Image 1: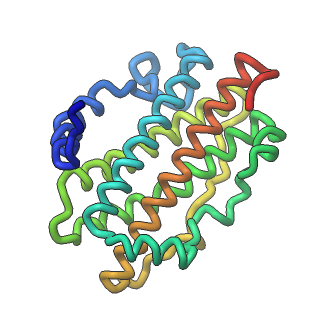
Image 2 (image 1 turned 90 degrees about the vertical axis):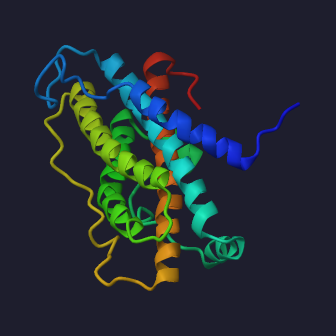
Length: 231
């Protein structure tokens, strides 16, 4: 049995990366309606499927970005240091259900609002992450491209979730924005080591929250089709 080396896997990832971007299904329905805020032609079921596919891909790419950053810039002792220091994620203060029992008890409305809170809280930190990574010596182009792609797709996911809220709940457009203001501060440029650990924390926490977004959206999908058997 032939086992590919890390270097070979990296080569395949670089070759397949453009393909993954081109085959990903667009989230919005601009081809059917010029305004993303309405999208009357697309069904609620189809829109939810697109939102889930978008969230899945964002999580997958965030996982790849975190692993690549870790391999390039974070030696194992620093990984242990981060785990032992207990760096808090910026979304820890948000009222997002975490336990299985809490998630099972919340309504479809709160599921969607939880996803929206997470998405909106990460938009600015990911923009900041792009600016700091541009200053890294030897940062691979693929890592920079992945970070930029996730940042752009997160905005698209936000739009899709907002439209889904309007369709499913017959509400007006969401006016509440759950900003990272007060949670995420980056006025003073940190020292290099601190910057590496901070960026590593951002990537790790975003990966965790991206997975949570995917889980919540899939639970919502399950509730639409099989109300009594959704874990």
